[in-house]
Amino acid sequence: GMARSGSLPRSLARVHPRYKTPVNAILLMACLTLTIGLGLGFLIGPDQELYMMGIAITLSLAAVYSLGNLGVFIHYWSMRRSEFNPWLHAIFPLLSTLALGYVCFKSMIPLPPLPLGAAPWIALAMLASGLVVVYIISRTGKEGWLHRATAVYAGGAADTTARDTSLANSA
Image (cartoon, rainbow, N blue to C red; front, side, top):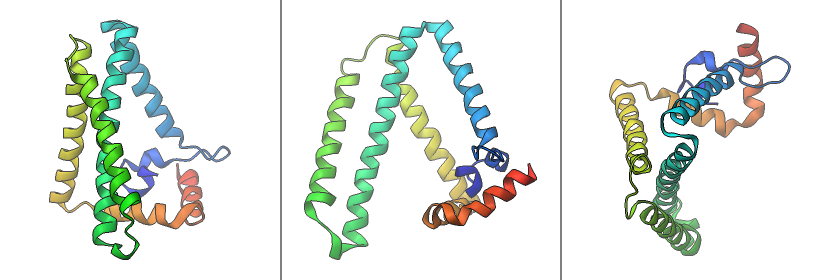
């Protein structure tokens, strides 16, 4: 995963010897989820939290999928031109991006009152923080984790079994 490739702290890669699950990563996510979930629930109410985070996540995922659609087009147009299929690599990605844009538009116009009105700003903050992290990593010469992540995912599970075992034994 992301900790094995170096994009997250190495301690999160610790794998349970019997269940082969990332123990520390699961504990961290459980703590973060409980802290944010209960904190926001007590602060603005559980129903408002559900609506606000639902809108924020919807907007964030729409951005991710739209960028993925753009990536498909650019990849096949520039790197695999002989395999480029206008329907699969241009029209369908464009139509799905337009549909996602419509969902985003209807989620934000008119902007609901607070706390729901904070959702677009939360989504924008998540996007901006991701861009800042990528920028910092690219400027400090620490983008090697991206190449390692590519190798981990391209190699499949067979290539990472020995690494998982050594991480489980070392932790």
